[in-house]
Image (cartoon, rainbow, N blue to C red; front, top):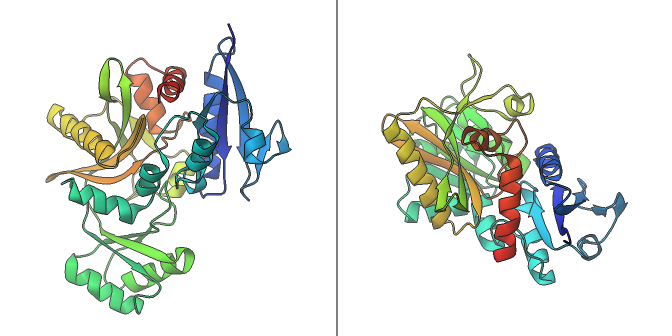
Length: 322
């Protein structure tokens, strides 16, 4: 029987380059050689595509590929660019379409959709460099919600570029730092609670929208919030099974499914949720889950007796049916 040729995209020019390399490597290793002929399609930090170790135009790199698994995180992998390339070429791929993926990546656009769907999110307001002085911006934020504040770039993931302003005095500089680096800034209220990560997979284990058990994110003592450095240093633990109550787990699962549907995502997603004494708050949703062994999705799969291999084969089948 002919093997299915699976192109695996990894790398890319976004800030999540290193994580993408690891997710792609996990997929390349997971798919059994007797059933799949995997093609490592690498995209470098400058956005140049490579196939079989040589630079190649996307059309050439993707030639003869039956199905694509997109392990790119952020940037062109989630802003609709790669999805549109694959759609133009008529190549089936796993994951969300161009528009839902781009909305999910854009935290400001995603907030508008989630709020309209009645999903609880932290209070927030966004600014660009054209919106006056950072002092004026800070006072506008202060009129809406109190300190501390989370200031983040709207189009980055994995806690990249986040600045915490503990007080109103700290806020103008925090906003300025993010605006200088990214051109726009989203300021949200600091929601205190226990952070969970939960995966959603379509048509898995006889469920139309299957939710994996939530992983509770545990950071080292003395750290107040999840940072890019903690993630990159693998200094974060993901506890699955978690110690959330049955009611909390149900609320987390319901919120993850509702967000997946509200954003129009396809095949799978991963939601980050803060569980507070007032209930869960949705922080963000990723259309392209991280799959390496230091990522929560990997641990969630293991907790139900599954694996990245099972997920990868299921993703291929979802792409073929799409």
